[in-house]
Length: 280
Image (cartoon, rainbow, N blue to C red):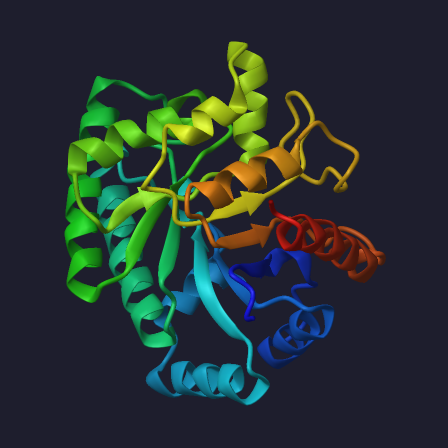
């Protein structure tokens, strides 16, 4: 019987100097089912939104030739160009990034775009930035609906949207099948410690609206580059609950920071794949 889940690899777990064919082949060799592409705030990653038709076609062909696909996108470029910005030009760029990301996803066959749960990041949050965020989120969701691409909130490390419950406030306000939740279990584990709440109860507030889950290790007040198995995230309980809620796509989120990256990726895969294979 074919397995009932897919486990993906976050692109930044691999060195930036690898080309797409090398990244696809490496992920496939470990056992991963797909790759999550990164469109972050750097000019290099944002330039992908302007890929030519020929470049898009070549990437699709590479995926088909290697039988492994890019099926989710982590769109963190809005950290620098947020939907709620006080600067009109920044907001214009923000919406342009969103539309181009949706079109790129459509062209490459990406089903889910994980969007950052920030009204602003490098500016001070206010009533105005929150209102503007909601207005532009609605516009973004309408574009996504046109192309049949799902936008889904990442739960972040800041107060604005560090829990599934907070993300669901906006999902309910917009009330569209094209706006959902794609939580980061590491981030909401940290939030649960901060608020002295049950992380699993928070995860359950997204029932019926969770389209995937980032599997990332954290420790209190630290959100990145924690080796799997050395932090405080209870992956087994979280994955079992997410699976019971209908979640079938998972991504191991880690970063290539040293020459042991291949070993770290393999260990993350083995750990998460073992949990998923043995779900009750």
